Image 1 (cartoon, rainbow, N blue to C red):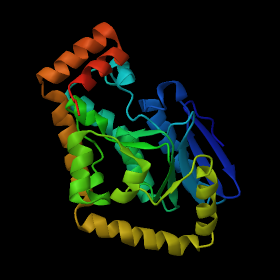
Image 2 (tube, rainbow, N blue to C red; image 1 turned 90 degrees about the horizontal axis):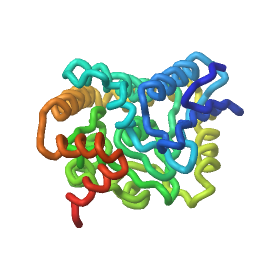
Image 3 (cartoon, rainbow, N blue to C red; image 1 turned 90 degrees about the vertical axis):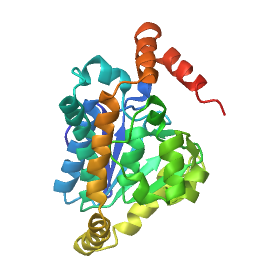
Length: 272
C-alpha cells in the first residue's frame, strides 16, 4: 500500500478507510491532499480485496474545504482564469473519481464539512454523520462559488438555495431533512454505523452492484448533471477573476491581519 503525505489509509476486512490527515488546518484541502485522495481511490479500484471505501477526517472534523491560505500562498500562484480552472480541476477530478467508482463510497462526517469537502461528501454514494456535523458552502460569503455544483441534484430547490445563496451552515439534523445525509448517529457511533453498512454492501456481487450504481448515476447525467458541474466550474472561475469591494477588502485584511482576523471581519457583514 502506498504512503501518503496527507492521508492515513487503512484496509481491514474489505473496507478501505481514507482518513484526511491535516488536522491542524481542519483537514482543509491543498492540492497535495486532493491528489492523495485521488491516488487512494485509484489504489482501491485496482485492489480486489477492497470492496467498500469510506472517507473520514482526523481530529474531529471531516474537512473545512479548500485551504485558502495554501491557495494564496502558492497552490494558485497566478490568479488568472486558466490557472483557476487548472486549480479546481484537481478537486473536481477527485469528486468525479468518487462518482465513477465501481465500488461503494461512503462519507463519514464529523465536525466541519465545508466547501469542496461538502461537495466531495455529496459525491459519495452514501453520507453518514454524527450530531457534531456542520455542513455547507461558506465560501459564498467571500463572493465565491462551488466548483463541483452537486447541491441542486442532491436536495430540493429551496434547500439548495439556502445552502448556496445564504452561506449559512446547517446541522446534521437539518442536513438529514434536506436529503444530504442518509443517517445521523450519536457521537462515538459513526464508524461502527459505516462499517455495518459496508458489510451489507459487501454481500452484493460487485458487478451487479456497479451496474445498478451506474444506472442511477447515468439517469442524473442524462438530465444534465455533468453539464451542471461544468457550468459550476465556470461560475467559480468567473467569481474569482471578477473584482468586487468585499473580496478586495478581505484579501487586504488577510494579508495585513492574518486569516483569523479577516474571517472575523467577514462574519460581521452577515448579521442575523
